[in-house]
Amino acid sequence: MNVENDMNDQIYRRLRKEIDERMPVGMPGGEGDADISILKLLFSPEESEVAIHLSILPEKISRIHKRLARHGFSISLHELRRMLDSMVSKGAIMGGALFSKKDNYSLAQFAIGIYEFQVNRQTPEFARLAESYHEKSLIGEFFREDRPVQLRTIPVGKSFGSDRRISTYDDITRIVLDADEPVAVIDCVCKETRDLLAEPCRLSDVRNNCIMFGDGARYYLDRKIPSARKVSKEELFELLEKLREIGFVLQPANSRKPGFICACCGCCCNVLRGYKKLPRPSLYFSSNYYAEILSASCTGCKKCVARCQMDAIEIVDAKAVVNLDRCIGCGNCVAACRKNAIRLIEKARIKRPPFTSRNLYLKILLKKHGIGRLPGILVKLLFGRKI
Image (cartoon, one colour):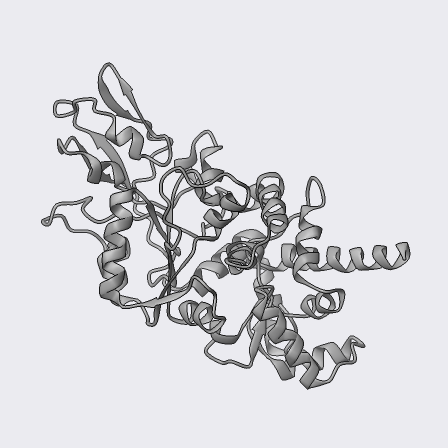
């Protein structure tokens, strides 16, 4: 029995290594065994064997079946489809409505990916393991100054006057109007984790605040995730106004036509919580603005201090002061100030997001492995090998 367990552990270690080395954002090993324990909750040993042979790009099931046969894995096409669909339904791999071609499947990275797919599926055990893994192992992979980030921060509504021009990719109104449909709102997986750990959100009791567009929305709706609900764009604008009033930070995917928008708080969001632990978190964010206090108008009321999710504002000599090492330009302080004593300033160097999510992840991969790997990737694509 111990021999069997050891063999199974080896399979899960191989799978973790595949995710770590091949996905744009890896799944590093580290202190403890949270990574392996997480994979055991999501994959059977046989499923792990199959997942090891999936590519990071979506592929037809027929190609996956042939690859498995070449590696001595005997399974019928019917059984393979059943197994892959089961893994998709568990949020362990990507497939189904996530791809326009429904017969396609691919490996998934842990974050953003497998972890987020576990919303409304988490157990206290999974939440405990995910928390440990985020804090002890994933933080070094996820928060890197030398690679593009998966999320960016944009100003909330009412951060600017009506006469202020703002780039389309930083304009929440334009993003929503241009977004693919359907639109779905689901529970925040980070808040769900904190609830299961008996450390609930200190900002709000709102949980249904993760916004999905197009294929991503269809994926959650098709899986009948309990919290997933389809909304119109008019309803979404109403929700965004509610989230602004509460003080959530808007973080869409880092592309010009994002597939999702996260509405985040500093006490639950794994991204904001991770960045807050760094000495200069603003260096890691993709954000085009920073807050500036107009001291002559500031009364030191502390509303901006309470509203800031990055602990970037403090009161010094009865006036608010912004720590630019921590400010991410979300605009929540501007919207909260009744004295109009805060404004957003555009940075001298503007960060323009990649056109698509595929462009983004290709950039991350090239930064991770270097451009020298590109010819090898093209050869693998040509011959139908996994990437």
